[in-house]
Length: 80
Image 1 (tube, rainbow, N blue to C red):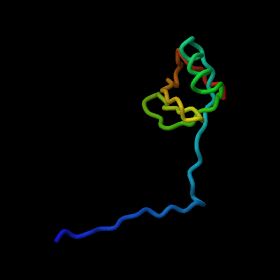
Image 2: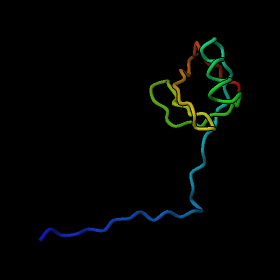
Image 3: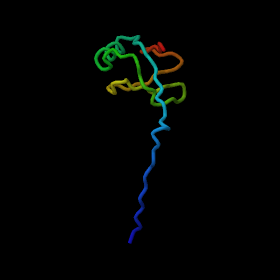
Image 4: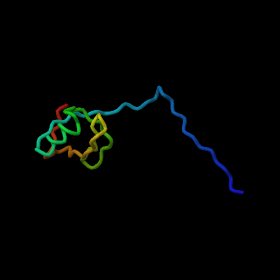
């Protein structure tokens, strides 16, 4: 008979990690289209990851995810 293992993760609500937010402004026509129709003109985005000079962002309405280059991006500008 195969042994059965029960595993669970206990999460203490007082130790929640704070989300990091970045505000962006569209630069290109492509970004303006996404900003108006997918992001509903909301500038704030949640940082999902950082890696090699790039930042993975998700709009606060969870409808659009994209990558932003920290050294300067053609489509997006960080405003805050």
